[in-house]
Image 1 (cartoon, rainbow, N blue to C red):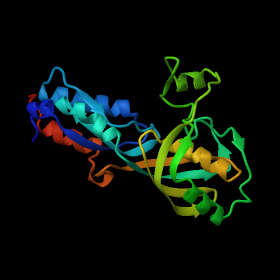
Image 2 (cartoon, rainbow, N blue to C red):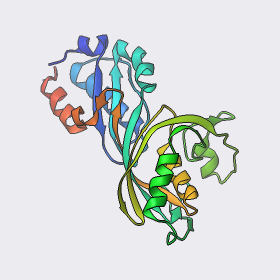
Image 3 (cartoon, rainbow, N blue to C red):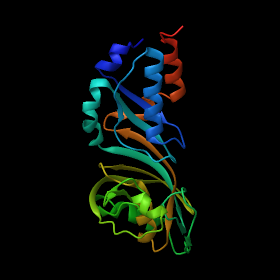
Length: 235
């Protein structure tokens, strides 16, 4: 059973983030649980890479002195699985917003899909979604988007080391991708639609790996609650 000093000295905790939770909410919950159950007044807790609310999967959370190591994990290669829906775009590139444009998919063949995935590898210039937490002129991009303001977002270089198509059931396409820091899978889905002369958005996303860490080894939030409550110093 971990003690308050263990958490202060530093722990690397790996979680399977629940659907519809923000990364910030999960970190706050973990911090609150540690403070409440181990009677710690103050402790640093941070995460190594944001997941969108509509994504699930691996999140690395560090405590205490190990928060200084977060940059080590942020820079490591990540693996995701997910589903792209062809034939429609959304402003957020996922299901956070509703479909705003529809496109034909009748011309798209399985060969076209595999060819795009093969070509979309290596160093790629990618434009982040406007519905993101990146900052421009001191404001988050999503603030511009929600206010209906247009904003120019420059492309930036990312690396896709592998892009595998795992299922095609039109209009749905399942995939597995391994990519560098800074990659937006929602933008990948948008580019996927454009590349196939149609439109597309992301309907499901799961982060499965960060470096050598695997979501198969991650704990659920409920499991962490059970574990840390059992070690509570409160009566």
